Image (cartoon, rainbow, N blue to C red; front, top):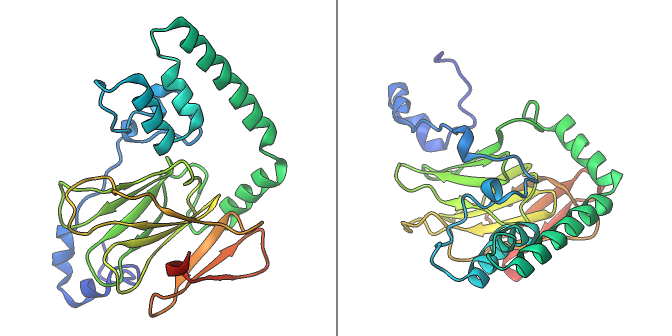
Length: 252
């Protein structure tokens, strides 16, 4: 690695330390089994990372998967039921849901995502394992968005990697940390913007609260997010909208 590399994407605190100290930054490696392409609905892929105790009852497992990933994945869990009636009904509903989803996904939406890939700063965005990343401006914290619609937070604690994921978070395009906060992150994606609050002192890998979802008319997918210098306002841009939107997040 050359000493002349551009440090604009490093946190400001990193520029004041010796170059050799950066060798202690954690290595981030994504194994193939950690990721799955978005849109896969098979239980072996889509619900693998959901922390659902196998000792829980079937309704509780279905509800947990529905809240964290989505309806089709929850139906996939129901299809594993020992009851033939429940299994067959869930399988039929899952098939209907997939066909309806294919019908509902119109060409303009697909065209928009093609435009996102075309103009994204990430090369080969459609197939890239890492869609985007963002350093926290004040502390050692890196948010990394991956192809499986998940955001992972890396800090100096190698054993704790918070995972941000919800069924609304699809095709992530951009990230932005909120200034003067330790763990508020804006995630721009196909459905709008999600505001996550991650407790910096927490030792668990999943946030206790769901993200706040911001959306407005045709202002999606959101392709750029930026906070005001004081962190009070969030500005978003969409490839399908000629307007910039300014959000007062605390009032949403």
